[in-house]
Image 1 (cartoon, helix red, strand yellow):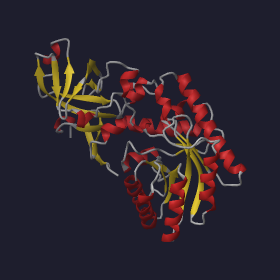
Image 2 (cartoon, helix red, strand yellow):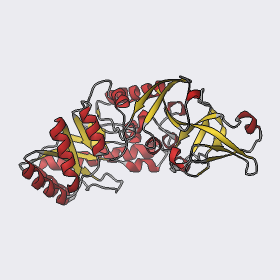
Image 3 (cartoon, helix red, strand yellow):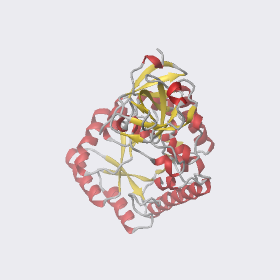
Image 4 (cartoon, rainbow, N blue to C red):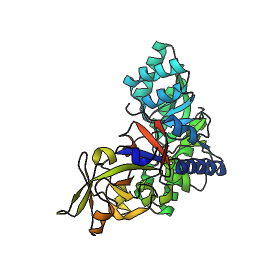
Length: 376
């Protein structure tokens, strides 16, 4: 099948680029002597994840319990659920563990959650594993490594007979605040220092800390050393997107995910092309524009070669319409109504979430359809 046979909008995944991206990250982590625990919150697909883990069902990171269930039933036996859990979700987590036997590691920074988890696990007759979330500078969630509350929480987990303290984790999401490699390296250094400091605190207090987990894609790529770190978590590297490109952590030729759209109108009064890809097909994320102005909601490419179509970008989105301003009327001839374009997304995680599957392509050929899951 050719991409010209597809209805639009569709989510395309370039298999050559995906294979290169996943192989490159595995090689990078090997060169740094640190384990890779891919974050699959973007991919949400068994086929993509198998490439990320080198064809073996190795350790992965998920962002929803639905993902945990999906991958556990597919044979992934080592899963870190990297969003702080609350008591009302414990039954869901327990069901996944009971039905699949997965080693599901939960995350918390709240003593109240640990106490509730202990009561729940005792009542249900099972054992739950936890890592303590550490704040390494983003100030989104987590405890500071030297905070007394961090030790108090870890001790509550460790001392409960139905809970297992596995270690610590952190996420340096503030690495996205800069496009300066030196700035990202500094964030990476502080991220690792915070995780190591927390691990040392736990061990010094006589508690185990087998997992010392860090990760954001920019810091994983630019960190100078992972001494004392047992694993890294990252995920957008599989697909990349314009937000990553704008921060200089990838090349445009690395971008593997795109949205296939049709030109459905020429608004000559407004001086614009109209696409059938709007807010739902692309998202309303503008993250790339901070460091790459003019990106709008996505950049247009040739549907076959992936060459950029000048500086064309989707600058206005309605629910199902995308507006692409044109300064040169020659674009109306080059892209008549019915023409196909591909749109590079700003934030692949959010764009992909609108679709149930990937149309996997090599060149202009559609070679398969890979399912993905959404929801919680």
